[in-house]
Length: 458
Image (cartoon, rainbow, N blue to C red):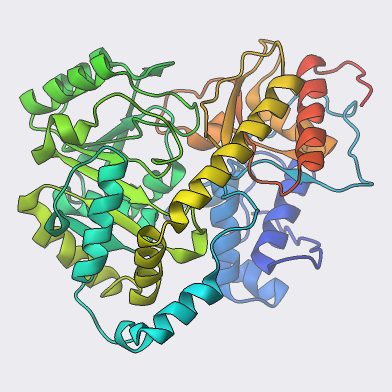
């Protein structure tokens, strides 16, 4: 076991400082691949912080592909990049450009004080500070049904439960039909939060093949024939990280396979409303088999923590039970604010602002990355960039970090034993101003065009 003792900077949350120190020490070879890190308790004691802080730092490092761990064995450093990175000098004068996280655009949004004032005038504040039904109030479930209908999923209010964000909705959906040891299918590259939820519930995960049009039906059929999966988790409208959108013919094939093999489906539509999608929803094709997750975090505010989970009528009581057993009820105050913003047109104004701004940002990306085989979709916060053969994704993410840009490697989204493709995901929404975005994209372009081990002037 290494006696790793990080040197922490003083900016931001302590858990992020620990993660950054670990990332830097791995990148610069101060910790070797395969080394076992201190336990959560040992590192917390040496740094004088609580164990939860270290656990959160390790979880973030694991999400970024820096470390791996197994119960009973410990936490280990993963393989560090082997290519020479010395040619990529960091741009220390202007700091790091973080393009690794898909977050709502930092721009004027809905007014929280105005919403609270409106609630106070209507005596709404007193009402929402009391206990409510675990599935949400009648008004909130009706608002959820309206939102789901807007993203192509017609449901009745009594088919909706209000969840504490999309991550909570994933847990509720998975737990409603699958138990410990059950097999869950997903795309071969998938949202890391789903993988964490499945692990938490003790469920097994298998990735199925995808291409530029998303899930390959033949791969789904093979998985259903060779094993007995209980559920499929997928992102039909905007796949994270590749930006693929499943076309209508494939959705019909997926629905037919699900029917024949008694397969339930969770479709994650957290960017519904931002992305155009003319193909029929899986929930329209096989409504008795599909859960739909709609969230307002990527549109209104991540701090609102409101998601709507629509499901088959026969499973609503189970969904409600899981909300009760996990959080008792989703914050009524947040749900009431969401109701207000859905009713008064606020969400329509914000959506229009978001779309216009993303048109601008995608235009900037198209200019800087012109000639590279990147994939995106109108309204999307992300760009998926397959790499030239000379680059491996782990090598280029380390090179970019040294050059002053943080992006997400395809490795961070890998769902199984199959290797991830050499590609990176670049968030266009993570930085608040265009100047930083362009600077980050220009660094990415120069590094991608360079060759590992050869001098490149930045």
